[in-house]
Structures are given as C-alpha cells and as structure tokens.
Image (cartoon, rainbow, N blue to C red; front, side, top):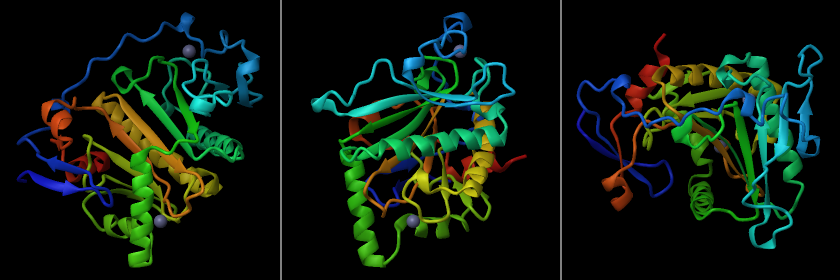
Length: 311
Ligand SMILES: [Zn+2]
Ligand SMILES: [Zn+2]
C-alpha cells in the first residue's frame, strides 16, 4: 500500500498511514522500559496497603486470602482535589487485583467484568458532584506508557474542566447529529463492521482498528448500543467487553509493547458514544509529529486488524 493521508471520523486530526515494506510487529521500535518496583516496596500489595482511610471502595472475595479482589483508593499525590477551587476534581487509583505480578489479561473474564463494574460504580458516585464535567478512566501499562508502578492498576481522573479537544469533539458530534439525524459513532459502527478493520463483534460489543489510527495497533472497543457513559452498560455488555478486552491485551502482550487504554466521559452530554481506546506505544513521535502535528503511522489499521484476528 502507498502512503495515505487519513482524517479522523469527526475531528480535524490527520495521520499518514505509511507502511514500510515487510514491516512486521517485531520490527516496531520499542521504547525502553523502566525498572519495575520491587515487590516488597510496592504500596499496592496487600501487605503494605494499611492505609484504610484512603480506601474508597473494596470488592471483597471470601475465598481470597487477602480478603479483597479489587480496591479503590484515593490518589496520594493528586493534581486536582475537591478542596482546591483552582484545580477542582478528584483522582482515584483502582488496584485491579491483590497479586503483584499478574496483569489484567491474566485474570478471568468475570474478574475483568468486576473491574469494569468498579469503573461504573465510581463514575456513578463521582458524577453526583454536579461540578464535575469530565471523568477519564485510564490505564498505563509498562514504563514508557507512563506507569510508575508495576502492580496492575488503573486510574480515574475527574474534573470540572473539559479539555478543549473534547469540547471540540462534542460540538462536532452534535453538528453531525443535526445534519444526519444520527450519532456519528453509531454510523462508524455500521461502516467498520463491514470493513477489513473489524476485529471482533458479538451482539453487544464491537472492536475495530480505527480508519485513521494515530498509534501502531490502535484498537477501539465500543458498545453497539448508543450509551454515553459506562454506568449504562448492562451485565451482558460488561461480560462481552471483558471477554474481548482480555483477548486484545493478550495480543498486545505478544508485541511486548507498553500500552494505554482510556474512556473519556463527558458528563451531561448524552450525544457522546462511549468507547475504550487502546493505544500500544510502539512509536516515539519525533520531528515531523511534534513540528507539524501530523502523525506518521507505519502500521496500517488493516494490518493491525489482521494481527489481532490471527489465531
Ligand atoms: Zn504490588
Ligand atoms: Zn452512538
């Protein structure tokens, strides 16, 4: 395939899909990983997590010797907090499991479903604060993706400030709806499920590599039903979601790349369509990217989809 400039589904974001001939997953440039924290120093391990005051939510399991399966604690060094008018918000950490060395994809589908349900519960609780406009749920895995701790965890960042690129996306989605009478992402689903970028689909959930992928092996997981935030996911939707998330993370593991995943949730905007964006971090953005804002992606989303689908 010849290099091709592609535009995002709705935003003014551009990427040059420029596959190098013969490029295979193992050729991807790998950012260096940081040295993991030793287990006995880890503040998320059950033996060290004695700060009960910081626990916001504990999912218990009678069978587990640690007496908890998933724990949510307040972020110890938050950038935003509810007692700061100048940077209002809240930050929490979700410790996804007691085990120090396991990754999310090592857990059962039902455990991953419970992690998603914890995201739901916290989003519900945090959005009761009428000042909160934006709730971001994200995970950094691996040194270069920004994780400073090895113990598997994800984070919630909630604030009254809506980042400009999301405000822009909200407005464009609303304009699209006025012009077409439908949600742009519901229409994207209709298109992508017939495209070579489709990776997985069942009656609840779809996963595909987006047409204008900015990152190598970028993939989105989307509920097929139009819902704007995670609290509206049903049990069956959470199950399907967990099942495909596990498969995808196992695949990313084969690439040995760090990754981020995230959900943006714009509170009070039901026109948004919820999706999880998973971005493996295989390329270091350099001159062209930083200077022009134009991203070069050497792995086409069609190629990436083939990789995810391969047995
Ligand atoms: Zn640990
Ligand atoms: Zn929709």
